[in-house]
Image 1: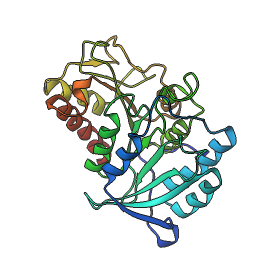
Image 2: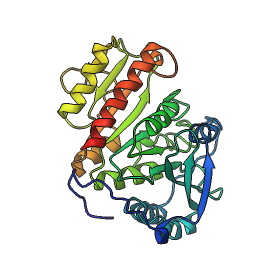
Image 3: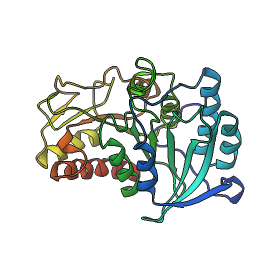
Image 4: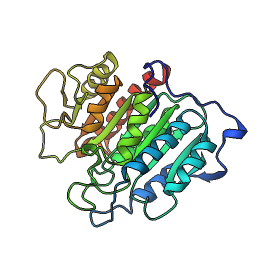
Length: 293
């Protein structure tokens, strides 16, 4: 695993033809991602990578984050993953995608990383489809704010045996492996969740996972949501449901001294409608601040 870097040293992406991946594709990014996630179901298969595969994945992701997609391609091929340079037809922006090339790795998820600039932030979607519309919000953020990455789980949270696919609470997943690589490079992240209307008397629960305090820009996120009419619970200053204290990516962020935001949204604050628009704009504002650091 690479050594941790300070928060101001975000992952660098130095473009070079010698380091570009060999595969290229022109896609509508939103459709490309959502067509993938719509196939996920509670009855779907899931198997986690073993320890050796996770180590290989970490090395490959590390090379990609350091700007060498060609070497990442070489490292990831033996474990059934490929790297493709995507160009989004909607925005013209380019992204490097890590995705499965075989059945064994099909449920490990995907990673999308900006190929146009230095990496400044990441959005994480651990429960696509199960937490309805979090996957759509993740893609929107990636398209709206330059300099980002999207970490996407590859199975419904109820797929496979027991809680095997609940990657927000499992350290043996490809999802967790990828997030840790980002954290070790000081890349701040927001993890997107959704809760049922009956679960909480709020529209949004904003917390910092295992951390007991919040950076100024995270407090500003909560303030903006509240100013826009959303009912917000702040995990660092109040007792809130769904604070994500046991979230394993939040715990690893604390160990790596990386900024981590755990965001729970009510159904009305996801998908369509005024509340959802206000929530998405507020999160985009947070990411824009990170992109300027």
